[in-house]
Length: 183
Image (tube, rainbow, N blue to C red; front, side, top):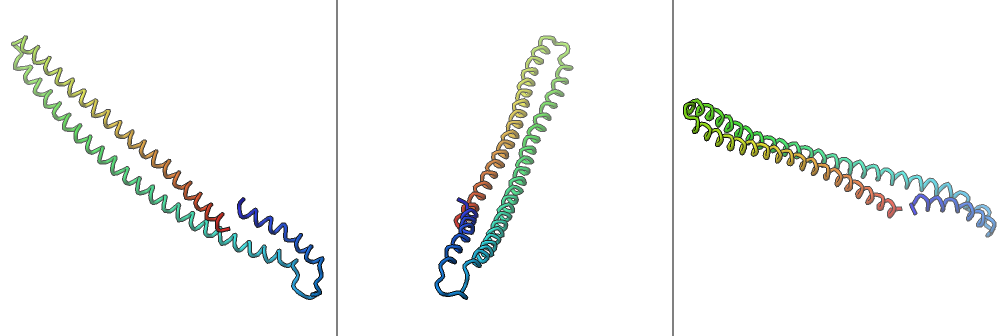
């Protein structure tokens, strides 16, 4: 049972106790009356609850600050990783495209040289098509790897966010347990 309900029960029972105690006169007419105690308890409880609320707010805001810092750090790391992957694949694509362009220029030159020799020209074009299709397949594979890498990074980022939410929930549960235990 939450501590607030326990306090509420104690306060609710207090008037019954004071009525019971007041019915018994022990010969001290001018002494302290128990009817004043609910106000004292109520003031004390308000102070305790305010102090706990303040501690809770302080610890919650500190936890949120830490989580925000972690998220910013992870965001920066994700951005750096994306830039590294982008640069890596961009360089590979540029090299591959330059090779491909060079091969195309070579094919054009060779085609002009061998225009008189039909059989040799057909053979060369067949070989060149095979090379180009392999390179094109390699480009497609690199592109697929790049997309897969980006999807994996997005998935990892999504997992991080959900695990971050789980950590926040765990910390909130710890704070609640601390508050319950402190009451």
